[in-house]
Image (cartoon, rainbow, N blue to C red; front, side, top):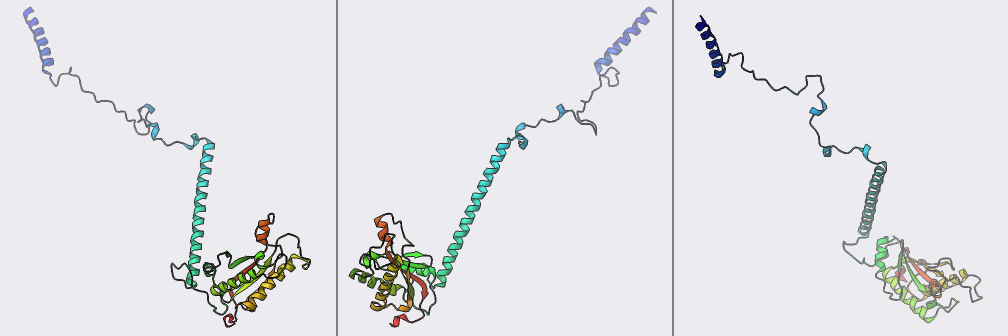
Amino acid sequence: MVVVSYSRRAWCLIAILATAAGGCASSPFKKASVAPPSLEPPPGVAAPAHTLPQVSSAAIPPSYADVDGRQLEAALVRNRQESQVMQDEIAALRDQLASTSSQLAQARAAGLPPGTDKPPRIGNDGGVPATPVVMQSAMTQLKMPELQPRFDGAVVRLDIPADRLFDGGTANLVPEGAAVLTQVSAELERVYPGHFIGIEGHVDTEPLQNASWASPHQLTAARAAAVFDFLTTRTSMHESQLFLVAHGANHPLVSNATAAGRARNRRVELVIYPDRAAVDVAAK
């Protein structure tokens, strides 16, 4: 009985060892595999902050709340200034384009071929005024080396020093003055035939030395009349295209503070207008 009992115990022990060594699938002692726990929270539950993916701070755009108010104001002023500069440039370009278009239209109206520097001689067409472009372009054809014409709005002004035309303080033409007026009238008739011409007298602010004149206006009126008489009697100009203006000392070209300035202000201006006389002055 003792042997049999021992044999049963030994047999059980051997069976347990064999089962463990064989890896029996049905063995209750085999450790079951456990799935890793899921980190995703159930629906409706927010995930813990430490489980969320971390975003780099460099990828987050700066907030305007972190910018100093003075920096924002400076940036705004800078943008406004740049915008104003651009608007001014656009306005200047528009003005330039408008001016160029106007000049082109005037040149076309005058019948000038493209690229023409000097227009043809201005003829008498029954009183129709010339355009400013034609007036200014024709001015370059005047051949008077000692006198420089200037364009003023729509008219051409030719300044002749009074000291070259008259004795000092008088309205008496000197021989040199007669020669100057002869040359000037020939050039004006060649380039601006039949145009209205104003004869305007000017003096400086110095007191009159000749008691014959009660005021500077009387002296300038007498000198303008002397030029008018010479041009209508000794040249081809017609009296219907000339008129007189006495300015006295009211319109100086430069300051009268120096002797050179006063000499320049003593002058007779021949002002050529774009309008033409209706009569045929060429028939004189």
